Image (tube, rainbow, N blue to C red; front, top):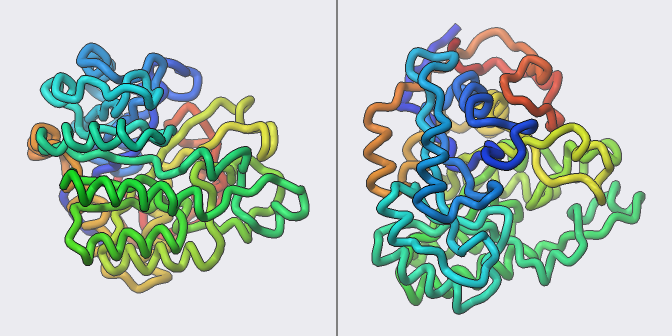
Length: 367
C-alpha cells in the first residue's frame, strides 16, 4: 500500500439541506460524510429554505456545526451566499454585508441569474469586494422542460432533451459581463465539450475565469445510463462520451478543478423516473476513489496534479476571509492499495441517491 499526504482537500460545492429538508441531509450528517470522504473543508450552497441571503443565515449555517464528528479535526464549513435576494434573480442581495459576514463566494446555485442587468450589477459589486461570482450555467430559456442530454435512453423513452446550448448560452453571457467588470467568475459543474472550450478560450484571453468538473461528469456518460433511473439525473445532465473525454482532458491540462455537487434527496424524490424526480446525486464519500480512477488510473494524471485539483485550485475562488480559515484545516491522507467496492449503504450521508454502489477503486481516504 502507498500513502500520500496532501494539504486538506476542499469541496467548493455541497448541499446540506439545512435548513429545509433535514430528512435528506443535516449539517452534522453532511460533515460526517465529508470527513469520511477525506475532505478538510466544504462550501455549502445557499439554496436552503429560506435561502442563505443574509448575515443571519450565514450565522445559522455556522451555528449548526457540531464540535466533534468522526475525526479529531472535523471538516470546516464555509457557507456561500446568494447573488440575488431569495435566489429569485430579480434584485441583487446585500453582497457587502454578506461578504463582511464571511461568505465564501456568491452563487444562486440551482438557479441561473437570467437578467443581464442584475448579473452585471452583481459582478460589479463583487469585483469591488474582491469576491468571486459562481454561476449555475443553465439558461432556462434553453433548458425548457428538458431532463436529459440526447442519448439512446432519451430517444427510447421519448424524454425531453436539454440541449448543449443551455450551458453555452449561459457561459457566453457570463464571460461577456466578466470582460466588462473584471469580476472573478467560476462556472459550476461544467458538463459539455463546448462549454469547456469557452472556458479554455477565456483563460487564454486572460480573464479571471475558473470552472469545476464533478466526479459524476468525469466518471459517467449519458450513453451508459442503463434504465429510467433518476440516480443518473442531475442538472446539468450527464454529457455524452465526447463531453466526458473533453472534461478529462481539461482537468489534466489544469483548466478545471474538482467539486462534487453533493446533492442529497429523500428516496421518494428520486424514485419517480427521469421526468418527475429531483435533480442531483450525492458524492462526498465516493469523490476521491472516482476521480482517482478517472484521472490517475485511466488518464495518467500524476497523483500530485490530481490532488491540486482538490486542494490548490479550489482555494482560488474563496474570499480572503474563507481562505484564511483553511490555514488551520487538517491534511488529507489517501491510501492506494487493494481494490474494494463502494458501499453506499454504509455512507454517513442520510441519502442514498447515486449510482455508485459496487464500483471499485484502489484509492481511498485514510481512516
